[in-house]
Amino acid sequence: MNSVRGWSDGPVGDEAADGGLSRLLGGAGPGVPDRRIVTGALVCRYCGADRFEVTAWECFCDGCCLPIGVRDGDVRSETTAWGLEPSALPEPGPSPAMVRCPAGHDLFQVAAAYTLGADGDVRRLSVGLRCPADGALSLFVDDARVVPRTT
Figure 1: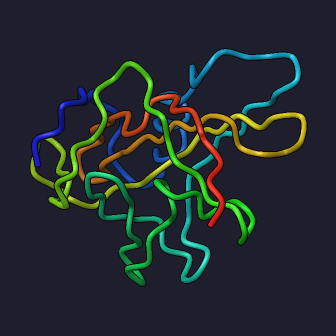
Figure 2: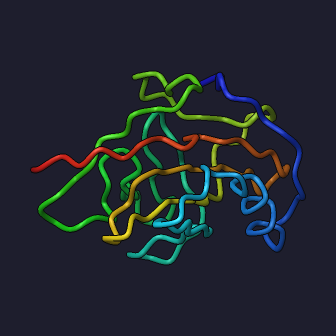
Figure 3: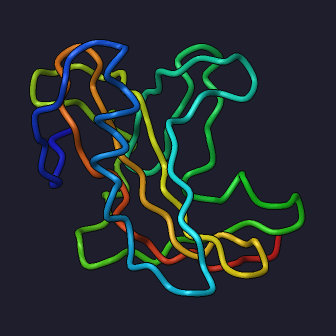
């Protein structure tokens, strides 16, 4: 899948993962006094893998194939899911095709930056991708507004 988002060069190799992704997400949303921004590289909570295959709207663990909940808010409580209202950047298309970096690789390290409200709920979300093979970086979700949805 050709990404409509831009790719930039980053450092190559596993040891550079967190630094490159954190820089990419560094400006994730404006700071607001009653909110805090949390940023970090993601690791699968089930198997500990740090590589993910990415489709148009989800990231799947390379180790156990389970989704990490980008689109529906798997990090929230069991009774509440979320929807995302995109920022000004184009929304990923509905195609289930795999995302690939410009060099054609399809496994990524993923980092997320999310803004928490005073109540601890996620308010905004940004997700960055990094290809460990060639260092390519891309902003997958850019400061999308999180909208609670009852399941």
